[in-house]
Length: 568
Image (cartoon, rainbow, N blue to C red; front, side):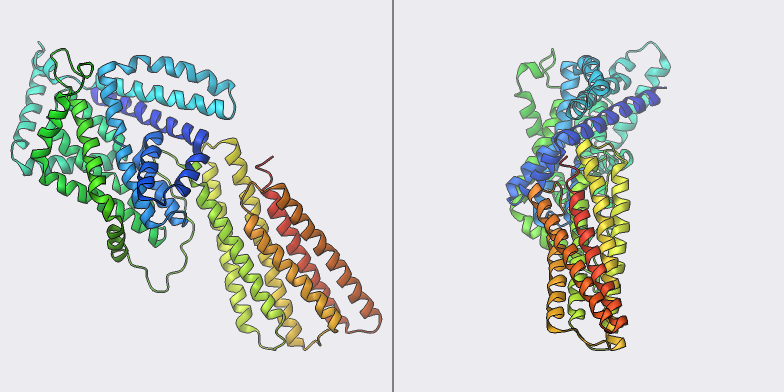
């Protein structure tokens, strides 16, 4: 029963962390995305961004998954990502301080009142107010879970003083086991270090692993040095999440995950070497804390010493290695090499099992939509070259166009699947609307690409059948029409990111009206030539081309209009 009570307490803590993180993402996710995408060009700014993001999300794993996702979408460079990862390592030390404070100041007592304040906001609130309720409930459950975890793990001293001989025997057996693997110098350190790695991999959360470690240390199950070794192992174990997130991503995302592993490993190596000199320093700092942080016997609790160890280790590690970020980037670049002939990596939904980062994944989806629009423009530019070419053999041009059309179809399938998975997470109302807009936009872009492919096929038939060119005036009008549609597609690519401004919408409507007018004028002229005994087949083919061009204009306008939905 004790095991299940501990597991339940840990579950409350993890659920609180998840609720807190998702509430913060709904409230401040857009600002966090902007900061991470724009405020990381400087190494120190990157460290600060990673630190603040992790403090808010209460999960370094979630932050590193976001970093890998941003690198995969080319929103962050490899060098910028390393700075953010460094900051995430420092931000995760906040968990140890929260646990220490819960143990000292009984923050668990105010946990249920905090949940009580947040609950009405969940049911009666909307938008930010509802998200604020989630944040409060998350905080309350986090504190309550930590308090319950501390209560669930029995104190070794009280067990030894028990009148029940079986309980005393259990405590003695555990103590003798710990003593048997302790006191062996670096061999003992390595055993507890490996235990920390396995613990973090098992619970998939460095914060949860830290909560378990601090609680066991406070209750006397393990010593301070052993706890510090476990904490070092947790620093390596947490890199597994980033590695798993990078599977299926592009080469730069894989390099970012390897950089995370490399940075943490280098820190652990020097700390293991300096371990027996560093621990006394931590204990000395702990003894100098204000009396309010100490027990009645004027001793600093082990929880605060562990928090100091964790924070000081990561801070020194950042100071030592921040100057070597370009070197780390070069090493991982050589470590993870680009395969020859490697095609652009398909879009994959990257998340973390414990804390959903759906709100933060939106930039990758938006980047993919913009990339799909770029492919459509590239495909149309290929058509324009073909349209001006009167040669009979256009097999290569048709094959190239078909390859691009297949790539756009695959993009649509990947983006749609990604957005569907993204929408399964709890999102803010605004971001839910943005996902709907993106799904509509990719559908319109795919339809436009189909029209472009039909245009290439019609042009190939025109050349194969040997239809003669039109008069200079008609040819000039056709060039104006094709050029106008090309400009409209380029405009769509550049303005597809929502929310679309009213000025951009008006300009798109002008483009579409102009394409309607050109199509009517050219079709009317074609019908007039047919009545004058013109080449009926050639004129019918040209009418079909005009109609396909006008359809592209319609799809462009629809794609732009989809971006105005989020603004409304």
